[in-house]
Amino acid sequence: MDEKAIAELVAGHVVDVPDFPHAGILFKDITPLFADGPAFRQVVDAVIEHHGRSSFDVVAGVEARGFLLAGAIAYATGTGALAVRKAGKLPREVLSASYALEYGEATLEVHRDALQPAQRVLVVDDLLATGGTAEAALSLVEQAGGMVTGFSVLIELAFLNGRDRLAPRDVHALLTV
Ligand SMILES: O=P(O)(O)OC[C@H]1O[C@H](OP(=O)(O)OP(=O)(O)O)[C@H](O)[C@@H]1O
Ligand SMILES: Nc1ncnc2[nH]cnc12
Image 1 (cartoon, rainbow, N blue to C red):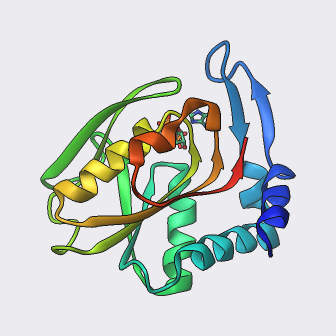
Image 2: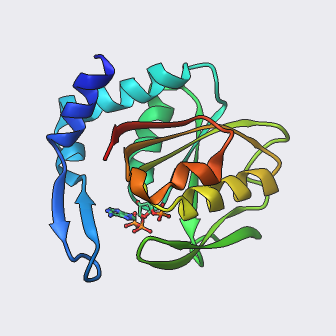
């Protein structure tokens, strides 16, 4: 599928929800996309095609919506998956990164031994807004000894300039609004 068709596919499966979770936030609900099997498969294939299936060793998904993408991409490419978790969920020694996002603050964690030295990591999530979440995931991968080779999101909110925080890395969005 070409880029325009993929963008239209994503746009057609997003519901805009005003004032969630706070007044003034226009929440992009992508659950209809995950619920549509053929559409979900097409976006997963588009992400893999953009980066190339041999360009990463591990795909990292950010809790919670990123997990769905990471699991599917890992299965399709035969790579490992890394769950980048919200604080307090992992049972062993962790690395942590705190950040602000469009509508709050949080801390992300991975196990200290989550990656092998210099492993190449693709970071995926449903949406890039301020980039705080993605930047925290980048920090965790680097703290764990890995290298981020790129980011993919289904939707980028361009007016928040999140990609500037991730430069010069490849930031790929299927739909930019
Ligand atoms: O670019 P940012 O401003 O950092 O915002 C983007 C993040 O916000 C959402 O996650 P949220 O923290 O709401 O978690 P959820 O997936 O568990 O709902 C979204 O899934 C991204 O991870
Ligand atoms: N506007 C938004 N919609 C959905 N998820 C988000 N994460 C941060 N901002 C968001």
